[in-house]
Image (cartoon, rainbow over all chains, first blue to last red; front, top):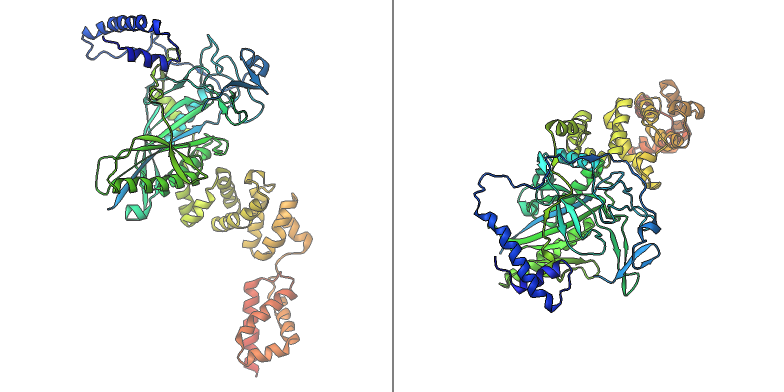
Length: 94
Length: 488
């Protein structure tokens, strides 16, 4: 399967990765190898086979709607590079 | 050239649960920022989601109310995008494979575009479960955005309507009907100022008679009925002008600017449109049994449309009265309590839409806070019906006294001596004394000024402290006036 330089740049943009110029071509080759490997499944006759979404034959368990204490504000913000008045503080978006 | 507007709404409803969708943090509006979070809703490594059973039950309740079908097995997906108020980097959502599918609600059709009066059915394509994002504050600081994650992970139900609406008025009626339904059923508090119900609209135009759709525009965040109507009316005009000039529309997302009163194109980054959905590996499929679906259906309250119809037939009310009584579930429940205890449906409706509504408006409160139980008010209705109290005294004196005390209507009437005078002899004596005390008006009446009759009624009422049975008073007065004529 063919992967172009543009495909790599687009994926990098969607995943918020900054690739250096030197990383782009090796990444392109890796992606091509991976996708070609996956493509080999297309040679199988899968008519009437349900896609497998999940490895476990398990119905989704449900949790009772009862509150439990979570983290304190200080704990919640503990890993934040910046905080202000109880908020996470991030570079301007919008 | 006649154009037809084709409109479909996507409505996000915050579900009224105690906890968030995938963790046991409290689901509550407001308060100190970042005080209702845990490793799951903060997206900390290794944390795993656990689905809220009540959110699923709410989805099923809505499905029943929408006459929908239920998918025995539905899934969750990851919708991936980067934004600071989405800590995991993806939203867990059911997307197109939803627990509830193919429903409908009925709204009053817009006769100006339908060509005829009458209700129309608007199809619902699906309703799916997903989680809300946190809240970003952009205007507190010119260089930073502040993020509160208390809302991150709050359960949402997205209700995707079919493109069946044909005017801004219909869109507004649809949103109102849906809003009333989810609040009535207790699925959401419906508080639009707090974002509990949010709406996006898709709209395109096509020539009358055309069956294909035109190029559609999505308008985001129409979070009040008025904005929805204004934005759609504006957009219908804008699209029509472009199409009539022979220009092509761009499929795009627009926002409503309430200050300028127009929709504006929102720059959409093409790349951001690719959410790269994939099945959420941490959540197996949501499986529903027939029993569960039926059980939820069987334990639900009577639906608003059914109840409104029943009010009309059971209590002989007009569609308007029934509609007004259905304003909230508590109001409708109070009415039924009053109707049952008093044995009078019509009078109960009159009281609800008259004195009771006026009191609630004056005090700016809901019926839940009214310190007057239906049974005590019913006591008052019975006194009026039984002729022991006249309606004016009931409204002006006894009703306010009921609100201020916990006494029965009977006790108030006895204590204040307000009972209606039904004694024909006593009323005759009263009428005679009034006529005797007013010889001049009486002479004028006899001379042909028959509109003075009202004057005598007023004088007699006053003389009787407003307690005289008005029907008897009128009878006796007419008899006395006629009798006098016969004598002359």
